Length: 100
Image 1: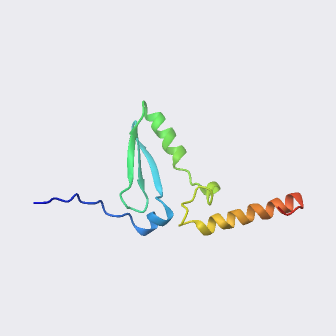
Image 2: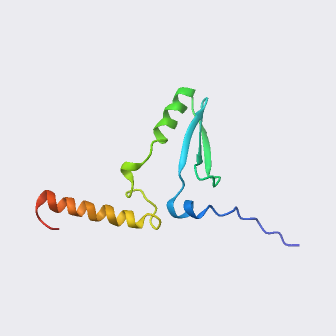
Image 3: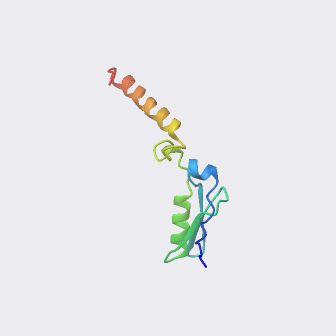
């Protein structure tokens, strides 16, 4: 009799293309995170104190709008990467007056 290991279910298309959207929270000295899209990705980490767990959860739970396009998954956010590159290139031309 042959047994086959079962593969975990594939994450939803939104998580595969756009990456997970983790939300962080603290419960006592434990910081937990889970994908907001409900795909099941997540985890936890225990800290020395509840204050430290709350500090890190608040720091990690900030939206990454400033990094949008810089830390984006390659395929899912490719148009955003191109837009950001073009914008930086245009701003470089305007700032220096010289095309690169």
